[in-house]
Image (tube, rainbow, N blue to C red; front, side):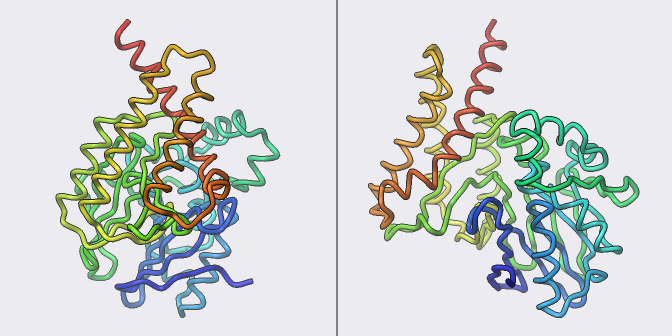
Length: 318
């Protein structure tokens, strides 16, 4: 079966990573002349889909110059090492805080197995292949690379994770935002436009940093944001406002429940109710049950991240 792809503007192709199910996580191929870059990698299971999408567009593995995960969370970066193996001329471009985890992914693997167990880890992600150090480029704030004459500028955008950058493609005036500009699933679109909300997953969520990173991206005045979860959205102030409101509301829910027994479960339940209510307000066509099924995982992950943030806050105030 061919990969699910969408050819967008400016020689940008979305390839569905099919992480858990279609429409959840995206990777992108950016072409400039006879060269290509891959932004986000999905899991190791995604790699054959990306390579098939390259071939279908007349591009060989040898023409890939860069593999660029926005951060090292495994739905974004797990396929990086396997892609580097398959693309002999490619180099990995990664945030300086994430480079060591791509060169030696043993801690990433151990931490994820501790959460999911070994069998589920391999089913979700496959094998995490180390990247040779000599093929790694660390991209600090405002670092630039050229794909032929096409410039990518890397912006340090913490808030979701300290090892997160966003990629400003100067040719298209679009930004590949990873998780910084939140989640907006196509199957939850509404007559009022995209429904967007923040991702506060473990372990480095910081609301003030995330607000500042969103403002920084908006200050670029881009035309589009290319979200990993999921797809292209217009870079409109209304979306930024909706996103920032969700950050504040999630934080308020967490603070209200900070002394509640089983607070992670309670926060998750309240976040899920909040998201479903937001979709109802925007007259989403999905049934409530479908909305809850789609958003339950995000609500759980957000609650876990908020719990870590609360613990950090409590230690700071002790």
